[in-house]
Each structure stands twice: as C-alpha cells, then as structure tokens.
Amino acid sequence: MLPPRRLEEICERAQLNIAAIHSKKWAVELRRKWRDTFATPEVDWRNIRVEWDVLGTPLAPALERGAAIRKYDDLRFTATVAWVTSTLDYTEVFEVSGQLPSHSWWRQEIGASDLYIVESDWRWSFVMTHEEIGLGIGPYTVLPHASEAHDETAF
Image 1: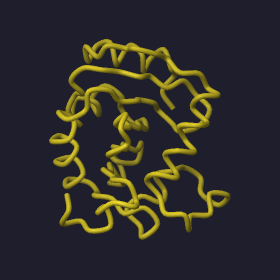
Image 2: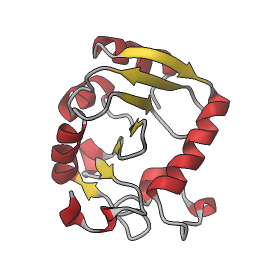
Image 3: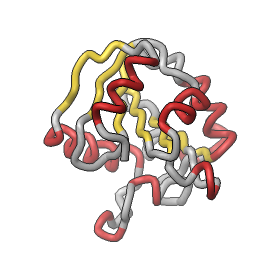
Image 4: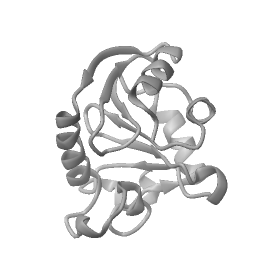
C-alpha cells in the first residue's frame, strides 16, 4: 500500500488540485458506497480479501486489462472531481480536481501498488492492482452494477 504522503506527492506531480484529504473514518463510508455501487448485492464481503477480487466476475462486471485501460483513458477526461486512494480500507482519501493522468503515467508513478480512482458522481471507477505487472490481474474499469455495466458492449 502506498503511504498517504507518497500518494499526495504523486497527485501533486500529476498537477491535480487536492481539494480535500478525507479522514480514515470517511474512507470507511467510501468503501461502503463503492461496494454498494459497483458490486451486486450478492457479494458476501466477509470472504473477500480486497475489493478488486470480485471485479470482472458476475458479482461486479468490469472491463479488464487493455479494454479497461482504453476505457479509463477515455473516461478520465470526463471527471471534474475524483477520489484517489491506494486502498478502500482505513486510509486517507484524496479528493482531486484537474486532468487525471493516463493509466501508463499512474503505473509508472505508483509502481507495484494498488490504486482506486472513483469519479465523484459515481459514474465509474478505475482500479489498478499490484498484480497487474507480474500476473496480469487488472486493471479494471467498472460502472455501477445497476447500469449497463453488465453488458460489455455498453463500454
């Protein structure tokens, strides 16, 4: 996991305006809403290690790998405000505005770490995993489960 100060420095290098740094307690609510928005109600979170474990499954349909990168690199231009964090666990969340960097820029900066980007209107989320480099797991672009996200042609 990226330490919050390191992620803050990365956001600053990306020339993102950090409007707020939300508390660890606030992050718990972000995680709850992320789960409610991007995964189906059938997910039993007691048995899930990290949220991205369900992405790309029927429990949370998502674009994966190259398709996810291409979609994110299009969607990033639509976000005026986003939340950026290295985990949906108990850690600080950065509320940023400005042009989100490309996937390749983030990957170069964060190395083998996880990254969650959530568009502030909850229209999409982009998730990068530490296993992307070595094992090819992720990244993922996901729409809310109640939308057309179940149909990959909607992307």
